[in-house]
Amino acid sequence: MANERDRQRKNVRRRPGNAPSQNEASSSEFETSGSSTSQNTTQNDGGDHTSAGRGRASWLIAAAAAVAVAVGAFTMFGTGGGGDVITDAENQTRLAAHQTLLATPGGLPVKMVGADEVDDALASMPESVSEETREEMRQQIVQGGLQLAWVTLWDTHAEDGDILRFESSSSIPVEVLALNARTTIAIPYPADGNVLVTGVKDGGGGITIALESGAASIAWPTMAEGDQLLLPITPGF
Image 1 (spheres, rainbow, N blue to C red):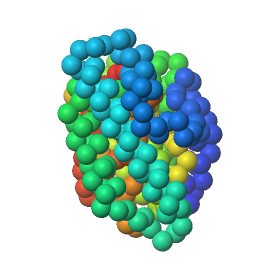
Image 2: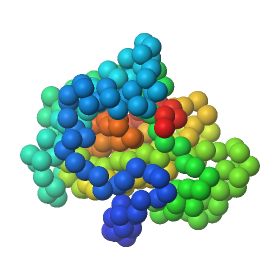
Image 3: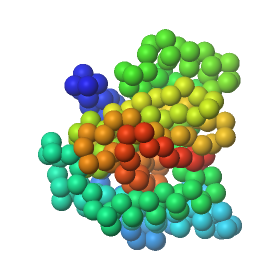
């Protein structure tokens, strides 16, 4: 576990290709103002003013509020080794953000891994993904049977060893150790657009992560070991 944590800390300093920066942690990302969020949404959607576009804008605002709550709690409870302390209000906010995400057409917009980013994408995966598996993924990508997408995640509370698994019926599972520092990884893009997120290890008090892609952020619902939730994603930029 210590070796994996050290490796991921080194990885968060790498900015693979044109992937989102892993160290851009400004407070402006967590503003709940609708104006800045809507502007980002317009840029990503090409000025979409349809019901789908309005739905995505609403979700971005709700997601920003959810992450703001999570970050506020993280500031309050710090990164001590005693496990996470989550309030009922925060849990409800996280659950509401996830329900809004599920109701948003397309879900979370993600950046697809480009052909010139494949090496960096495979290198970004944690040690739980073997070299043999990475080579298998590479062959599937070359044959056109697999695409990868960039996702950034971090532990919003104590860095206590929370681990999640990202998978779908058409892809190879990827397990990730959540750190307090933002970690950008590549995950297989599912054919149906739905990633299954499973709680693998809880360091104490619940598995507490946030996800980020482009302008969109969401404080993921608190999970226990064995819990499973859907993460709908769509190519967005």
